[in-house]
Image 1 (tube, rainbow, N blue to C red):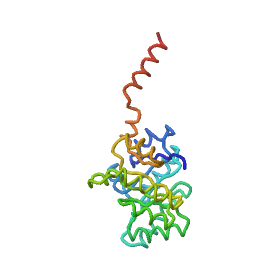
Image 2: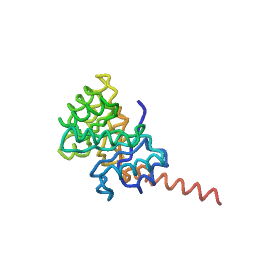
Image 3: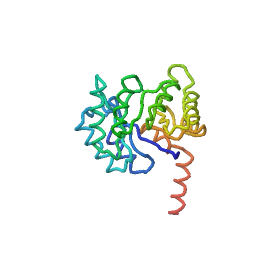
Image 4: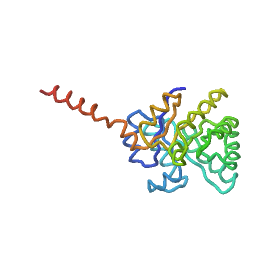
Length: 219
């Protein structure tokens, strides 16, 4: 499978800054990111954001459903999917209710990302149910004094052994250095913050070389 990078943000300013670059396959959001961006977590807001992301070139938009019951979360997930059926992938936590919700959504032809993955065993659940993505929280796993990189690599190896088409969508990256380390081990799908996106272009030697080229061109 080819590389896919996602921008992990609900802030339109981040989208405006980065999506036109062509670097990102799409965007990932959730209710927490919406709150941080000062956006309401409702269908009207998400419809507006979907339209903007599409205009800026996002090929996928991952939106998280919510609800106190399976029926409520599934109905809302279906509503999210109808905002842009070609681009929206509905996110659900990989807990029991989330699995029941995902099954209803997938039966209706909705693509699903299982999120809040913390253990390698959970990717087996995602594979068994036939999800499109499963999103482990790398940084938060490391915060629990575990080797998050090793565990995420094990997730990918398990899916490879199962010949599963589920993509491991690595989330909660804390450094640009996480990307090559995991890519070298076979991971190919990541969602990163705008800050890490900026860090990818912050190499001092590259910046100095580009400045020298410009100076020499005008001398």
